[in-house]
Image (cartoon, rainbow, N blue to C red):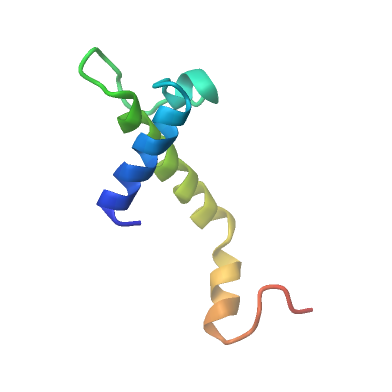
Length: 75
């Protein structure tokens, strides 16, 4: 996901949760050290990147199936 789009999404979600970070909303253990300089939307970016990494690890066989032209849902 392009950086600008990721930042816009993070800010949108952060605003939807009244400025709370994912650690407060989803009990997501933020991988960075938060301090007074950290903005909550920056934590949401970390959350989205973490979820994307988990999705990539969970479905490597799905990508291989799509490269050969087959559908991931075909028997």
